[in-house]
Length: 449
Image (cartoon, rainbow, N blue to C red; front, side):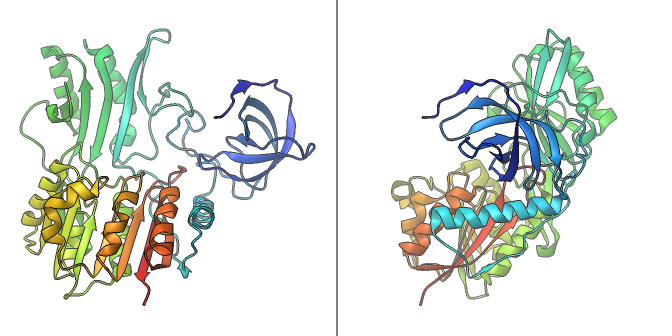
């Protein structure tokens, strides 16, 4: 258990050794070798900085950056005027190519430290557009009485408050420029104090904003929102209750879709469905996963945590058969509909709780009989530890693991390599979230002979 407390603000000089998992500089006091390491937001590796310690923990302290005495060559001017306050980004002051290098180093060190594994070769880090890339987001909404101002945006860095934003440089157009118009819209609503958040979904064909309204909207509020829809060329949905209550403000349900042109596929989804937030990187990711798997026309593929078929349908273009398993029934229904929409008939989808495989998979074991030549899995941040023994027993020759958390990836790779007889062939970084400390990665395993 960590001990936290305030500290006296005596300036110190330190050298930044690295970045931690939150993007803060790891600083060592150059004048006192016995002093604890301090985590200082805004400091970059290689820099000499003046800082103060503001909060203590058992193994490190937190500090505030006062002055950069020697600047890194990789330091750049942040594009966003709100950087440093808004918690949506943590690395805009670091050149994008250097961000990739930091994330690659983190992956290397995490796999070695936690998993005790090293791949036979490292994949080149994958990068796409670094601005206006984010097509899915959740924006907080709050009217602050003391400031007499309505706020729309992400949380402040390491604070529970919503940052005062005017625009967002990482949200896809047109939402990047809609922060101020949304503030003006909601400020004028009778339900101003009862709009809690906005879910953003930018599809290839339409932009949807889901307003979480805690009270019924008046006719005047509905009219104001309808005018906003028309002038900003977006669709507004309202959500008076749970996810099942999401409905269009007016008119029919919008058919949101995105495409994977290389595979001649179109995916339809709903505003609250999970999809990869970065469209360009998703295309590169799917392409890389299939390249690593090297699926052929005689192969049978298992896609775990398959969602609405983002990997399953491209795999089905190349394999004899694909079986997708997902824990969320609504996503399985969407995956089945997407297969039909794209006229793909060699894929089947099943609902199962992959966190409790022994009980939940009982109903889909007949579909898993006969084994699989290839497996792909893309689990949540918690990883796939529970499913690994059953997965390994299927005897697949190749496994591709797509991860959104390096620590759980390392843990699971350790089990597959050290317990179940797989060899880690390749691993690499996917820059799905530029300017943030969030890291997506991919790994290829092959069964040892």
